[in-house]
Image 1 (cartoon, chains in turn red, orange):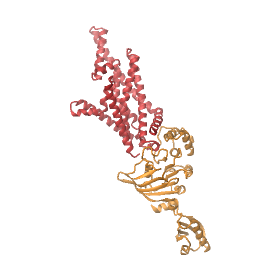
Image 2 (tube, chains in turn red, cyan; image 1 turned 90 degrees about the horizontal axis):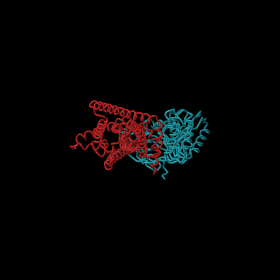
Image 3 (spheres, rainbow over the protein chains, first blue to last red; image 1 turned 120 degrees about the horizontal axis):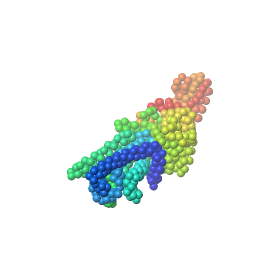
Length: 294
Length: 303
């Protein structure tokens, strides 16, 4: 009980400090600029393709109906590419504008790096200058770790919601057939999926931050692990039929595909994998922090 | 509860091949102001850090207020610590930071505790100042304030007056004096005059090992020797050794008579009065009498 109170005190005080600091604004700016960039690029490509197709159809004498049918076909094939042709997933996401899906996919690639930038100094930034010593005579090291983890999680939950809301509003403006009901439901789904995905990476960042006294070294180590996980996934996907293919199961990246899946079993496996990774990384962070001299 | 505030038994701390603290055994009774003395690299801060649970001992065991300091949550509410080289975290207002830490210590009225502690160190006006805007002395006093919050039974202060101006240093010494008898205070310092004035007992560390520990009176020899400054007259030391309680007498330097006595069997005031009386009777004129040695001299002898 005492431990929970400590976590609550650390979380509330450190979150207030973080929200008041300029750092959150910088991170929000970074995230929104990145999302805006992806939106603009994807939007521009989609518009260019649509205009070319419409022009070709006009040249061949086909009317608006043919253009609409081709547009649906194109969306289907893009959706198929983004969902590995999983029909249930394609059906569930059919109402969502393609631009939202692309931004989400790209965001999943960017989020781990963003999480690392956000929290690389959460522990190392206290161990290096030894300010952690003021805390550890008052609270357990486990409370400090969990408190800091929850601060990062809270900030990310807020930032992702703000950005997702922006992306969905943009999608609603550019796609009038994207209803408010579909917007609300899908916003919730996409937001939850991003949170489940991110928690494992926040835990990974906490682990890396606990390993070193220098924040810069923990950031570099964090990126080394991210690249290792991406490589494991890519190599594993490339060698599915050999023993080497099994390494993809050890990478968190592998499980991101089913985070939006409508079937509970599919989503459950993905969610459980991320929960497992989060527990593993947090456990590692605690083991390191518990054993180290401060 | 144990009558000892701190117990170290054969405690060793290594950093790679370097032995920072070597098999130190030490007991610090509750309610005392106790000094940790030694030159740079003697192992004071390492010992201090192990007492606070920051560092794990490589060998041996230590207990602080009856518990192992590295056990999770063991020292909560029992210990206030002023670490020597810990930087205050940036991005906080002093008042908010101290209130946060008071809340983390589960003190019943965190903000009041924070305000009182800041007042005690003369920093009440710094309540809304950002920690990164504090001068060295103000940061030190803020760190001191956090150690005092909630009046913990044990307060460990590593170099509490280092880098402070004389007026503030004197204020800090007064705070330590005020804690005597109510709290156990362990002070690590290079300032031997300060420690001699403040402490009931002390441990002298040298190159990681315990060179000597005891009460201040034992360390300075106050109950075993005194010096008489002679202005004029002839001293005959063998005559003095005939006096009750006197075990040895010699001229330590021109005009300085060193007298050693049995402090166990005889009260110092009786032996001193007897000796001075004898000297006056034999026509010796005296400039002054001082008990024991200065701590500084004693430490220089030992190290």
